[in-house]
Length: 108
Length: 118
Image (cartoon, rainbow over all chains, first blue to last red; front, side, top):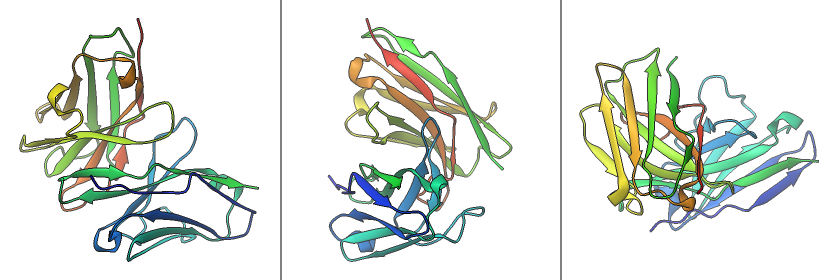
């Protein structure tokens, strides 16, 4: 089965840039989506199709995907960005959805 | 803006059947994929399966034999049944919408905590 690997945690100071990675074999050939989940809330889509943003998501959130790594980048990090972040793809071989294990973003 | 609202029993005993329903408000049931996702107590998200408005379904192979996802286009809702539950099925269960032609989940229900305990 297709496995997405994320670092368990990332820490960043306010105003700095956070990068959260999602690694998998040839993930660059797939569309990667990113979700933000705050405690007690449902996930929210923040980036889809590698680098597009849904309406209402700040431009500070961006994504890239190449080779074996997809990356969610959050610039000018704010305290309100502290959350768990999950990557997700559709695995066409197994024909089902795969999520990464999640990364806890801590704003110092 | 599509909103999803879910309901169902939150406390089950081992071997019972989990049953949840998700209502679709403010949008059409047609043309999309309606999904169930769960999240056990320690962080990770697990895709359970989905139903298209046409009635076709897909399921996570790890759960397939116990899962039934059904839809009712006349009532704009879809449902999840998971049989023979165990403590390992304790999780927050979410419904979500995947638009046709896309593979991301754009709308989510509020989540339902289902606890399996004797």
